[in-house]
Image 1 (cartoon, helix red, strand yellow):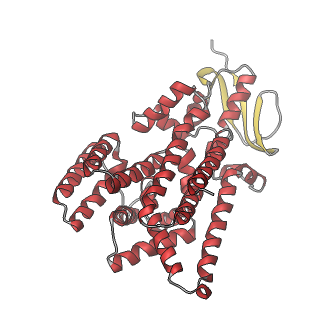
Image 2 (tube, one colour):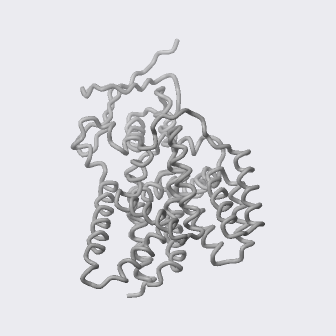
Image 3 (spheres, rainbow, N blue to C red):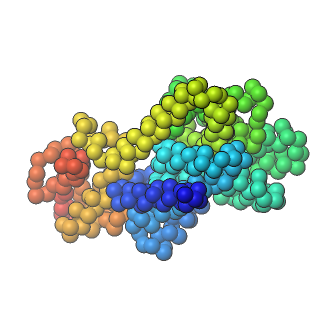
Length: 397
């Protein structure tokens, strides 16, 4: 079977699953901040999608899914330098699309998906096309947003190591311009968020893969087997850990950089496996199978997350609760002929996306009571009530 066919089969199945997931999610408050907040490049592409496909969940998440699929393809192309066997590159792509952090970035409207694509695009252009295109892309990144500030820092250090004076000057100028325009939050006092950051990293990559990536970066540092992928991954990772000593950091701005270490990890794993006799390869097979099983199980939990409501005492402890309820609530309100409500700010911003606006004639108040009343509304998943509120008409004289 053609390796190209298998690649597009993996991406095709991945896309179908992600499109299916769009119907089960509601817009979150954080996503409304992207959509209705200050202008950004991500906001521009989301609004462009909604202009062509309408104001719906499909149009909202389509750009993120497309960026995700293009990122997977770019990873396949970049990994050719590190994994000569196309079968191994296919395994790497499969692992990439199954990573918990990658799944979330593929469907949630946030900067992580854009950063992953941007980093992979730059590396591909830098290593395969003319360097002038690399300069052009980096210039665009300065304009597009502050998410790539750590890329400029990493490339500056890489330029010093490879003795590229012009490349160093360019990236330092880009770094300081980005800092000046967008800034970097380094406020705070030590609050012990280092272990929290490590825990989030392990959740994003799964414990086994995160530990192995950390090991690979450290081992390559000791052996001086370092290249542009190593610098981009390592500098951002170390900088995130240093910042975590002072403050809680937004890891969606850092984790995408660590994803670039996947080809390095794949190369090292395959090399360690290949140089050993068959009788000594068992532990590597076991480690790979266990990692893959954990990734698949984790993906199933993400894709069938609503079943978790059946075992949770408090529905609000569900990891995806902030991306549920709003769509169903808006549908129920419209079914009752209610087109506008007065409620808390976060829910109001979410309902706005589904056509329920703000007014002072109908009051929507969430409460813990599950008693069925004519003036109440309850949202349930799998026959489990997860949201209950009272709806009251307000007389205005």
